[in-house]
Image 1 (cartoon, rainbow, N blue to C red):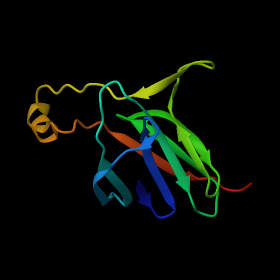
Image 2 (image 1 turned 60 degrees about the vertical axis):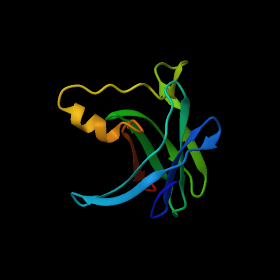
Image 3 (image 1 turned 45 degrees about the vertical axis):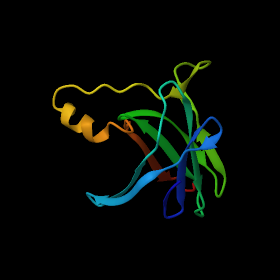
Length: 131
């Protein structure tokens, strides 16, 4: 589980919280980034879970490979999750681990990342101001 202050997030695969490795906290341009890697298997569905134990309601957003893929309102100390990308008002495309291919300048990087393959999942939390 990734934790920062009162916010936690984790990935669930087949109903089980994924193991996390190489947990890192880095300050980049004044913003704290918390990261890790998880094992994945091509074709497996996954969900992104959140919890905020802070005193205010907040929003959590999921970004995968730079693309916004939904979010949830987090009530104090309640768990929420996102399990796919809404592509229409009636269709939700589930999150699925895909195969990664590296080409060109990424070939050197791919040898470093060959086990496991990495995808970029980002989570953003924003406080909701009371009106």
